[in-house]
Image 1: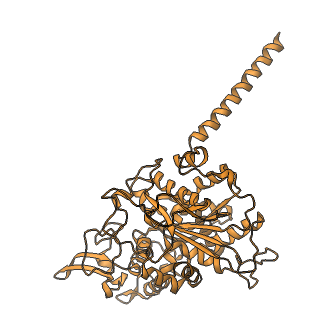
Image 2: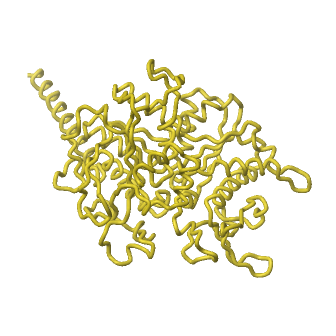
Length: 495
């Protein structure tokens, strides 16, 4: 009799555990973001992934790369040109052959929805995550809109065999959701993010010291997420780094937007300040342009690169109006923040935690040189707190290496002998939006962009092929100058 009671008790416990396990699974599924629920479980949704039809053989499919704008082309440039691996043995040594020779690429610039960094400050973290998942779904899909006025995506393309999130903000907020989506899709597709790659690069150059200082320049959203600082401290333990690491963060408000020529941040056709300006202003706040630091910023005032109004010797209005001046402002702000802390520890390196920032690397390097030489009353102000072997770190190379190793491990390298090709897409406002949703330039208004809600079937932006209509000429000129391999591929599809 006692045995029966005991067995009944164990049966009850077993049933309870099974029941709890089932509930836990259901609760986990219930926690899926609305866009992921639609993609995985709602066949009638326009965002349904149709993953059951995903190609089983993925070798010849393209590598998918996405960013909030054209800044991610700095990552694509590395993917197109990098030679860090031996293509025969797979060992990490150059062999004189591009690592991704023969690979096709699909690039996506979510230009209409940028800047991603502002969604967090507007309390829209969930919507930002939804945008990142939608970017991934597009690259995983086989359709695109041929133009902005199409009501349905009628163009056909190949799905991607691996995803590279070439955007630090998207990685910080959306990598986890994309990874979960891919795991539940059963496609076997994997995703690479740029943040871990950048931090790995940092520890590859840091020498063992009792205390070091490193900087991170990134979008407001990336800095607010704490992703870089958290990853640096976590990886310090993993890499056995025993010294104290001081991280100096600089949120680059307007920097990425200026690189992409967003009109609220840069408008070179203007000659006077405008009300719609959203960049940094003169003031004494932590993120303001400090009047007393104007000689240190050393802004370029030519060609309307600064728009201003003066009353006597004082500025009544002061607006940055070039990407180079944004670069100057944010780097000086970071170094000044470090100096003002009273530290004597030299700044060893600055991670360029946004794919747009390497476009201005020449300017950033010039600013470091100027700061080293800057003196007041014959005494150096910044020279002692910038290390002699100071470096800027671009995570792109390490992202490429991780992508290569992942594809090789999964036996999914194309191994073509001829050159690969690029397909590139950009988001634009959907046709037929209500009045007030777009401005006079045809872009989404700020209030509409950051006021949208998650989980709807509404289509406010669509992905269309790259064309000169949607790419600013000054941006194309910058790409041609700094990213020749990417430009040569882009030129083939826009001309």
